[in-house]
Length: 232
Image (cartoon, rainbow, N blue to C red; front, side, top):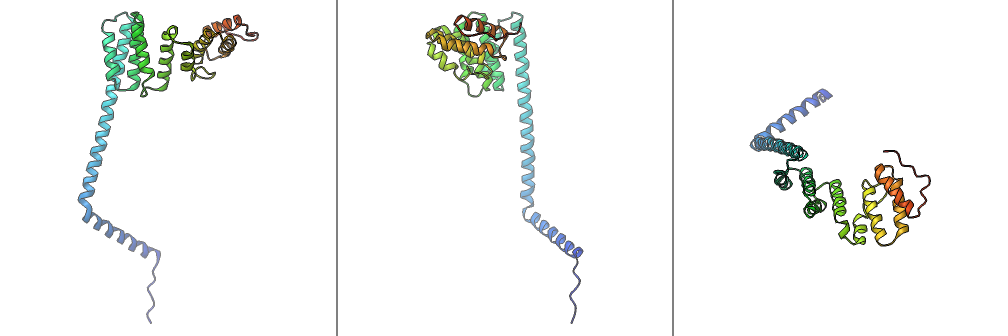
């Protein structure tokens, strides 16, 4: 009786490799055209994506350069073209940050031209634009509220500032101060005093704001002993 051949690992690997080559050859015979088309489409899509990103990057860089030039012109007192240029960037800028910066600058120019109504409108646009990063929206809301403060009901100021007028929030000092002043309008002196004292203790706040808050807290009867404000 004949003995079975000695099948070792090397022989099995060779058979397996030959089988894989045959399978791969047959696959490409059947689907070669589709594979080539898919590769071409992938390369075209990748190239288009890279080109588009490069194009948008160039546009954003152009927007930033234009914005910087407008800032220089405004700083030098050349305001003639600035409003129209800023309005165009605010509408057509290639990033939300550029558009928001243009709106902030437009509001600043409006304030410089004593057009507080327009400045308030621009800050409101930023604050209500969900595409703008949150820090921009919060800063705009603070400035909008500061311009409108005397025309707003105290409770509206308090409600509007509530998310920001909390210790630890970046805008606690400004939002807290307007909230405390609104509380005073409601004759809630004790609450206002406590909030002014919190502002005075907030070491993240500016020395001038903390010093002002400390003085008001003291005038309202709060215990201000032990609160130290560093020299400016």
